[in-house]
Amino acid sequence: MSISAPLTQELAGFIAGFRPDRLPAAVQAQNRLLVRDGAATLIAAANPNFSTGPRIAAFVRDLAGAPEAHVVGHGFCTDAASAALANGTMGYACDFEPHHPEAVLYPIAVMIPAALAAAEVAEASGAAFAAAVALGCEVEYRVAMALDPMGLYEFGFHPSAVCGAFGAAVTASFLLGLDADGTERALGHAACQASGLAAWQSDPTEHARPFQMGVAARNGVTAALLARRGFGGPRGIFDHGHTVFRAFTARPRPHLLTADLGTRWEGVTGLAIKPYSCVS
Image (cartoon, rainbow, N blue to C red; front, top):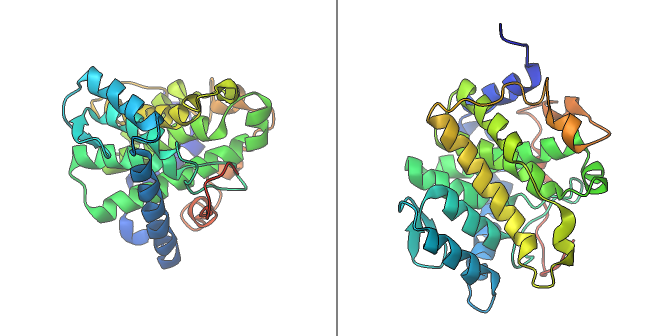
């Protein structure tokens, strides 16, 4: 007997049934700006003068996965999950990436790498790629607000890393064409992998901080790829059992996960562009 999971099922159904032309014009315009800004940041991080990019690229090159997706700025392809890891790490390496002041998030650093990897696997259109980035940013924002970003920090978690895994899973699930059932399983797999401690603050090399965005991108892509293969996963991850609300916060606000879903896009419109490289 299935257990009712209204929040998870509503979210999964929305993602599976979404179409790029349903993004409001103002949201599309902001999203295009964010994609351009985030892509430029990712390209900048491939510069060999930044130690993070070459090191993470060399790591995934040595793994030698199937050539499914490009590692930006390094001239080679590897498996989609590893490409997401490398690109996600680079996406957060320069401190130029767009951020969400309210939710204390850096979702573009996760979503563009996840979308690049999944789009190459699925041979998706540019319109689908852009819509997937917007969907992922929106869901990451909603998860963060439902968990309470300050509550995550109080528990020692990095909100962008924990919530980014869900956004990346949504981005990849949409591009891979998962149905609602598959998307629900992907969200469950994202929850099983969601991680990221603020322990990176003690790393003087600054490698561990951006690595957490890479892990979020990789985990989200992995979650969707597993679901695509029919791999079983947790159901109702936002509704019952060992939910994310029990794990990550003392002040859960689950209703914020789906409130005005599809009509409000604050996960996109609330993102700010940095004029300078800085920690915000």
